[in-house]
Length: 239
Image (cartoon, rainbow, N blue to C red; front, side):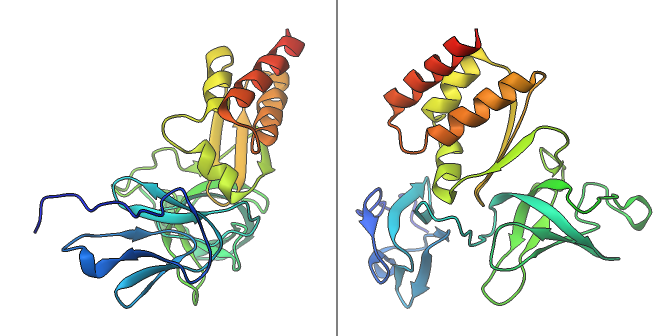
């Protein structure tokens, strides 16, 4: 196997439309590419299936970013789901996708038949997508790849709001996006971001929850400099 890393697609951070070839696999030897939303493999090429900007999470995960409200599940996505029904073997969870997702009752750290979690309808869950295709309902887990609960599970209290999938990816980007960096310097709060376009915020003071939520919702169309200025303005009003 070659040791050199694959060259990124020259279309990264550019706008693409359905049918555009974003990668030629015939030029890549023994390389594993992970495909996220908006991409599919056609023979030796990776093609766009939706319009938006091609993004790359190094070293090898590609997806199409757009401001759509509809979410298409992809394996390893982290999502915020709402329990809509309970069955003997699983919970049915709304993740804003085309179909409801299954969350098996044993998909929790140390999960056994004796300690099945009791989730009421309407419970907010932070979970990981472990199975996803266009035919079957997605499957979720509240464990990381090593079987630990990590940050996954029920989210209590706080405030959840909807945003676009593009905004969610911006909030999860590295380095930290400007709006979260500016808020984090002045305020103490918890946040969970789902790639399905949902955000949960919690803090000791309700005023902090409101300010952080408002700042995030206003920041989508702003540049980094304007995001920081907007946060400063909100903080001045709070003080």
